[in-house]
Amino acid sequence: MTLEPRILLVSEPTRGIDIGAKKLVLDLIVALNRQQGVTVLVTSSELAELRGICDRIAIVTRGKIHAILDPDAPDAHYGLAMAGERMPS
Image 1 (cartoon, rainbow, N blue to C red):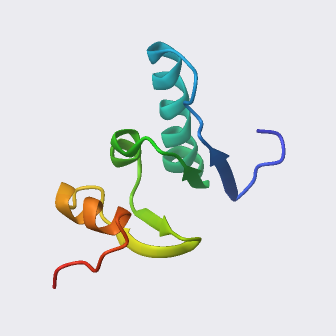
Image 2 (cartoon, helix red, strand yellow):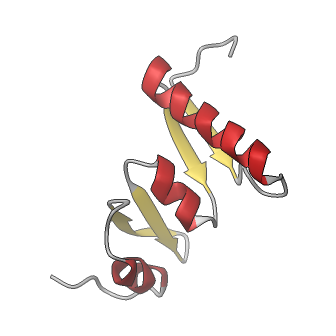
């Protein structure tokens, strides 16, 4: 990347591509973050992919961040957050 950005915004990076290409794209995103220190903000509806590459996942509801979850958080927490419900204490 010529300009060496500190932050990269990526929207639906794997939408409409085959499985092999998805792996290449996801590997590139991870490499940019881990090897070059680029902060990567990914918007995606593919929760399983996000859980595989992200340090944190923000759930946006009605245009606002409703929850920020660890990728290893229980599925139930993701379900509640996506439904706009409060998280258990």
